[in-house]
Amino acid sequence: MNSRFSRARTLLAAALISLCAACSDGDRLDRVLARGELVVTTRNSPTTYYLDKNGAAGFEYDLAQLFAEDLGVELKMRPAFSLEALFTHLRRGEADIAAAGLSLSARREADFAHSEAYASQAPVVIYKTGNARPRSLEDVGERELLVLRDSSHAETLRSLRASGHAQLKWRDVEGADSMELLEMLEAGDGALAIVDSGEFSVQQSFYPRLAVAFELADEQPMVWYMPPGPGSERLKAEVDRFIRALRDSGQLEQMREQHFGHAAVLSRIDSHTFARNMSRGLPPYRDMIRRVAEEYQMDWHLLAAIAYQESHWDPLATSPTGVRGMMMLTSPTAREMGVKDRLDPLQSLRGGARYLKNIQRRLPADILEPDRTWMALAAYNIGMAHLEDARVITDRQGGDPHQWSDVMARLPLLQKRQFYRTTRYGYARGREAVTYVQNIRHYYSILQWQASPVDQPAPPQQVQDYLPEQLRGVRFRAL
Image (cartoon, rainbow, N blue to C red):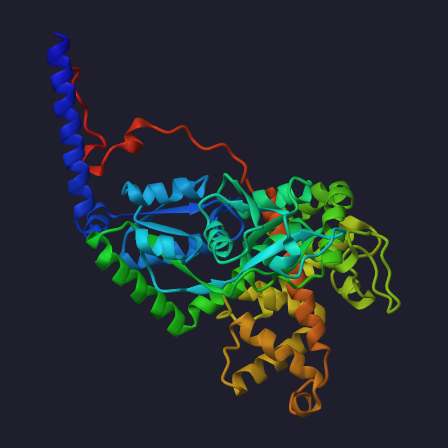
């Protein structure tokens, strides 16, 4: 009986291996189109993929969603909780693409197919302010560096050690997100860390005590990876075509501006102040802000970000020019919005929310979100008339007056005589309006991320997840 069982088990194992080989040898693009689903493995982080109140979000998610739509298939995201797991998904054929803000390295290039570059970033050494700042590898000495296991940074360190920097010491940390390294560094568990420059510019707001010491190497291309072998050739060609089309149309740059344009606006001190106020100044007014946001069909994170930019959530704030309250309303605006007491936080929040909504309604209908919100905020700060002047200049210079990134670049021109003398409403402090909007976007991003369920436990794995595609859903009879 045992012999019959052993023989049957061996035959089944052989069949599974044969089917797996068949899976890996076929054309991956054909399989994606046949099943109507693109499986993308990624990392859970503010720069790649996360869940907010509206569902999935993140730059890599948005990029992958556009590619899936381009192919005419559904998108399935498969988060990995370590870089090793992410690349294992590719090796096993469990994912079609790895889209996770990954740099191109010699080892990865040898092991996987990859796309054209869609961005670039440099590896940077991070230190905790208050400690001695190293300015070169020689300054690092024997201080321990934290790096993610299986990252391109670990590969770079091995190469540097082999080329003469024998003193280098580092610790490989299991995980998929550089936030883990930054948390360890801020907590004192490690002297230095290596992360990508783009990720740190977005995440520094969460760790205001950390700063860049120096760049470890030149900028490296960021690519999507695909399973190795000839089966990925057509999929790679489609990805490359998609990236080129996005780049040539300007849409790729617009997406990067939407996701990362607010990064690195604030100083480290401002970020530290905001982090402190989130825990002290916001809680007494959080429920009130939520209530008003719901009344005016706004995202409460956005209303909270505006209120912080205006007054640091201080209901008694008063400026030398006479604007007052949590939303810093002028007397004429308060009267127009029906606010009787500007120092009453509820009235102030309602007045500010109502005023912003009025501006949004007055903007041309063909300005779409999120540009519509950013332009409304600029008008909230500088006035609708001056915003319109900036849009006219944008159009004159061949830019798109419907895109915030283009209008933002022209707002500072309202301070230059050669430009404002040609406008209808004249001089305005356009640079301040840009800073105002970008600060709010930055605060908004932090508030959204802090509220997102990024630390949710991984769902339990089912045996079906480890089977080849052809065997998923098939029932086996007991032997």
